[in-house]
Image (cartoon, rainbow, N blue to C red; front, top):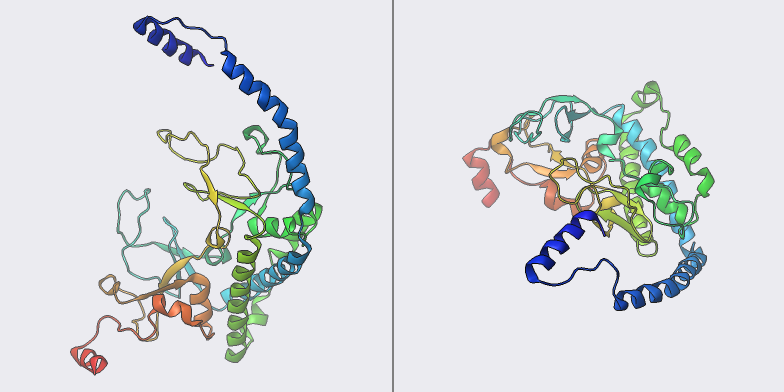
Length: 338
C-alpha cells in the first residue's frame, strides 16, 4: 500500500476513532494463498491454449490475404503515378484530384480555429491506405508486454502480424517480408505508357484486392483475437492488450497513458479513409456551399473510380452517383422530380 493511502486511512481512523493496521487481514491472506495455488494452473492453461494455434483450416485464408495485400499495394502505387492525391498540411483530410476542394472542414489545433480552408500538399500511398502497426509477438502464449519492454519488440503492420499468428508467415521472417513487399518499385514510364483501358483494369484489380483483403481479415478476426484502444485506436493482435503506457497526449487526461482495450473489428485493422468524392456532374472544384450535395467514398474507392473501375453498389449510398450537384437550376430540379 502506497504512502498516500496510509495517510488517508490514518486520517479516517483518527476521525472515526478506529484503529489502523497495515498488516493484511486473515481473509486477505486466505485469498492470496488461493491465488498462489491457482497461478500455476492458469499459466499451464494459457500454454496449452497456444497448442491449438495455428488452425490449419484458416491458413489458406491468411495466404489469400497476403496475396490480396501485395496486389493492392502494387496496383495503388501504379494508380498514384497517374492520378494525383492531395492531403492537408494541417489535418488528415485527403482528396483525390488535381486541385483540392474549397470545403471548410479543416479542424487542426495548430491553426487554432475550426472550419477553415485546407492547405493542400502532395499525398502518398499512406494517405490512401492508412498504415496500422502493432507489436510483433514471438508466440501467442507469451506474457503481456510491459511498459519497460516496449522497445524490446518490433512494430510490424497489423495485417502481417495477424497472418503470422495464422501460420502464413514465419515469425522470424516477418520483418524481411515487410521490407520486400511493402514498397513495390514501379517506374513512371511504364505506367504512363499504359492506355486508358489498361488503367481501368488496374483500378478494377485494386478494388477487387481491397474487397478480398477486408473479407479475409473479417474471417481471421473470428478465430484470432485482436484488441483496439477505445481512446487512441492503438491495435494489438493477441488475446490481451499490452501494458505500454502510450495512450494520451495531454497531462490532464485521467488514464495516465494506460490503454482501454476492447474487441477490434475490420475497420480497426483496415481503416476506410473516407474523403469527398467528385462526381462527373460536380464542378471542377468542390465549393463549400454545395457540401450537402456532394458524395463521400473511401479514398481507395474514389481513386479506382477515377481510373474507370466499376464501384460496388454498397458504396452508392455515400457516393450519390445520381444525385444533384451544386449549383443547379430550377429546370434540373423539375426534370429530376418528373
